[in-house]
Structures are given as C-alpha cells and as structure tokens.
Image (cartoon, rainbow, N blue to C red; front, side, top):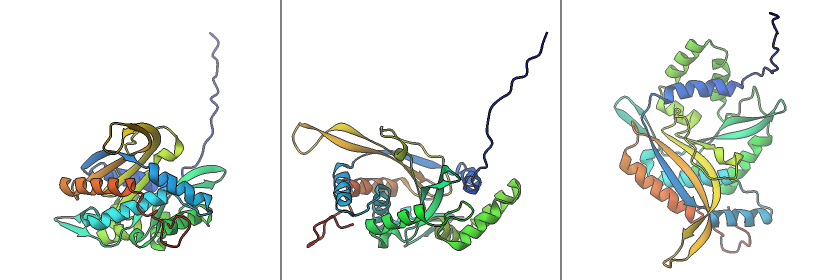
Length: 280
C-alpha cells in the first residue's frame, strides 16, 4: 500500500510577553473563590450623551466612562477596593483600574494591559485622552504598563523558566501595596467591543479582587416610568466577579446596585453650566 504524506499548512507566531504574565495571573486566580453577578444596565442616555459629545468634537471612550463609574462606586464602598494578606484586609483610598488596550503590533491587533491610576480624581475626558495616548504612543517589548518598575519586572519575568517565573511572581505579589500600585484592585476587559450582540462574558479569574467583563449592547424592550408602555432601550450586559475571600456578599451587592444607578444616570457625562457641549 502506498503511503501518502499529508503536509499541514500552518504558521508559527510568537506569543506576546503579556500573555505569559496573564497565564501566571490566571494560575493564581483559579485558587480564589469568586462570586459572579450578571447585570443588565440601561445605557441609552449615556450612549446618547457620548454620541453628542463626539459630534461636538469631544473624544469620549465608552470604556473610559465605565472606568469612571466603577471608580465613583468604589469611593462609596471602599471595601471593594482591597487586597487580603493573611488575616488582614488592606483597603486603599486610591482607585487604580487595569484595562486592556488593543494595539497594532507586527501587523496584528494585540490586547495589552494598562493601568489607569487614581481614576476617582480624573474625569471621563481625562481617562479617554489617556487611553487614546496609550493606543498611539510608544510601546516597548509589547508591554504597555504605566509603572516603570512593573514594566521592568514583567520584562524580566518572561525570560525566566516557567517554575521560576511562577515562584518569583508569587513572592513579588504577596505585598498588597505593590499589587495595588502595579496592577490595581479592579481589572476590566471589554469583550463586547468585538461584537454588536448581547451576552454576559465570564472572565477567567485573575489576581484582581474585582474582575469586570463588559459584554455587548443590544436593543431590548423595557418598561419605563410608572406606565405599562414598553420602550426600546440600549441594554449593556456586564459581569462582575468578586473575590469572596476579600469582599463580603453585602458590600458586593450594595456596590453592584450603586454601579447600576450611576451608569443608568449617565454619571460623569453631566453638562456643566455655561458649557454648550457635554462636559466630560
């Protein structure tokens, strides 16, 4: 019988350095005990104001607005902004939120991590500009990290053998203050940017005590006001994952309810007196 050699066609690509760091973070995250919340949020008014701002020449990022709403909710419920070490919880005043920014590297779109620091002190416009700068600014070694020390550590870690990398990062990130400074307490991933349909994404647990996954936006009928009339509304599907080792159920529930209120009222997009455009 004649043997036929089958030649497979494929291409080999190098994984981004950030993927290796993410794998290590997920190894640690699966050991935590996460509680999931699946939210359905009416973002009709927020989307209207963002579109109005853009039509007036103001760059506004939907992700930046979500980051601002998260930071404002955290300010009211600081228990969410914490890391645990042993029997102690380290609750921070400053809100640092990690996001993923898509960059063009080597002809391919690559999601890279970025830390938005002190989100509570920044406006939606400030955060939008910061994200825009990251998308177009310089990238070294396919890493976009605000903190220089964190960038150096990440670059070093990717060259270590797997077991040494895991051990080194475990030792390094045992310090809650260091984790807050370099990766924040909240991680946001915007899965919904890749599609126009609804749905709740379920992120893989990582080192953040609060993981947020932004799903899609779809038009759905909703009862509004006191009447029985259905109105078409733009509904955002949002997933929250709380590390129950750090955050109790009651604060998590209150935080979630407040976040919904802020987002449905278009928090951070309010026009100011004497300003013809939407103040962000």
